[in-house]
Image (cartoon, rainbow, N blue to C red):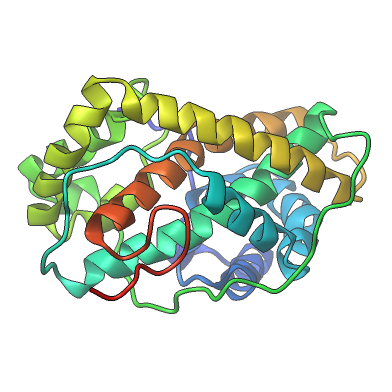
Length: 271
């Protein structure tokens, strides 16, 4: 697939970009900087402006409150069981993306709504306690040149689920490429709900609900409009509508099928 969204690798970041990446890791509570931030670093002035605009939504727990409410109402496709022993990295990757994608969906969705002029006219965004971020080591992000062709082919097939256009290659699958056995099992679990439309309907329902919540959070953004607002909005909205928007549903459904979380709450009850 064509890479429409170039990005700066975390290891290659220097100066202000490296400092912002560090602040994102600390504030969001993850060890890996999401692709959207690394892409924004390629646009002159976009990363510092965007991070300054939305950091308060994370710091004040607004995105966390939105995530808790969202998870209670999510529509999830029912996958065949994915329970069973896997390399520890599998559940670490899933936990990390389940957390970061969900709160990023609301922070960046709020920014998209603000840039589009879609912020709701009334209402006060709810602030509250932060969700505990999973502090877990993740495997190296797989690169096509270092990955067996068969495994990379599965990564690309999985990436079509929920988004046949493949606008953005979801990083979660690249992190899971170190467990090809799980990728095979995952493809078998997702294929039926992709084929019958359940997955796409769930993704669209969740994206609509999330954007409505994000439009309220947009009221909390107090930044001045940036010089490259249109370019920033195009990039951020692509991630919200494509990669993050679909992976929030897919990752949560996988964790439910793994028995790690319950359908509309946090940790699954012990058997």
